[in-house]
Amino acid sequence: PIIVVTGIGNEEIAVKAMKAGAYDYLIKDPEGNYLKTLPLIVENALKRKQTEEELIRYREHLEELVERRTAELQREIEERKRAEEALRKAHDELEIRVNERTAELSKVNAELARANRLKDEFLANMSHELRTPLNVILGLSEALQEEVYGALNEKQRSSLHTIAESGRHLLALINDVL
Image (cartoon, one colour):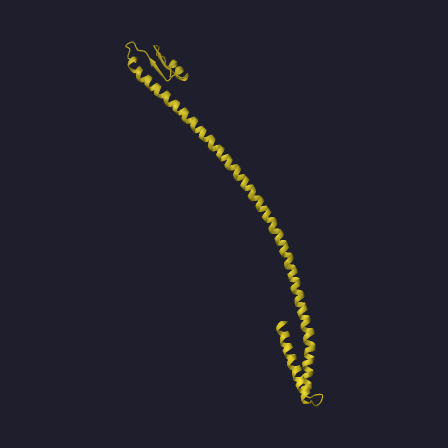
């Protein structure tokens, strides 16, 4: 630490000395009173210098901490950017897979709808094709049982009864199935 001690009591010189780095400015007086305050001024200057050095060390330490934390944050930012990019890619791939699967399902649904329509058409046709001749058989067997076409013997009556029962049973099965 620099302490300016001078016999000239000029304020301008004191300001220049302080700007140049002096810690204090002491004017000599003819009685020597400045010598009484000199030890206190020197002690204060040393304390000030020590405090400045501690502040410099503390500032350097803080700057080092800031640099380390900045580096950590930059690494974290890069990791997040990579994670976000991976997430975006996964999202895009998933969206493509969903679109492909949706297209596949739409195609399968269309095929199922077509198959269902064809089944309904088949069942309607089969219903007509099976019921029409069966109703003719049942109608004729009923007419024969009522002897519309002439008298029947017991064997004929039994056979017509079996034909009618079998026809009604078959009609019930067709109704259940179709």
